[in-house]
Length: 219
Image (tube, rainbow, N blue to C red):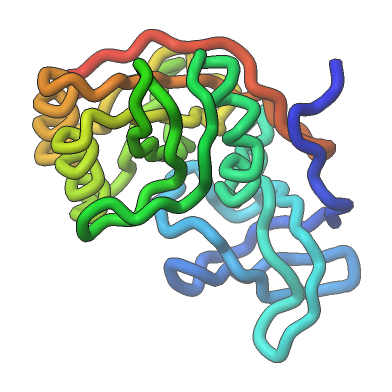
């Protein structure tokens, strides 16, 4: 099957250590390199020796940007900007009409504006890379910003989409690491926010949206 979104050509590396939230040290094909990590989550599955794929881009500080990391046999997408690029395809499959990207609603900027039930409403996509067993969850660390997005969606009657970017996920629930988010998610759903979770199949070549997953509202 074709990918819903093809990735640019990437290079192999091996994770060595995380310097901070947005940088890692790795062993590239030509020796040690420093890479930008476009994911501020805890990423608990990252450990020394984890295979990576990165997009090369020489800069004064890094040799490129991490695209994927391998967890067991599965490739996990760490650069959620690619999931955002494939969002219009997914929105259509869920029965909405994509109107535009990055609308400003009140004090928050959302990922998209879609037509739902005859109205233009905001849609926010959250990327879930943490999996326990076969249950994906979000967020893997407390997130004030994510709670604020839920409150904004509840006021606007919007849509919340969890993009499960770890192929092992077969269901979704809020992570136990942020009880405030779990409460806000339940309250948003009760206020009419439409909540979806969709699993992506991931490989070095690209991303393909797979099946819709069941959503549970308690950690």
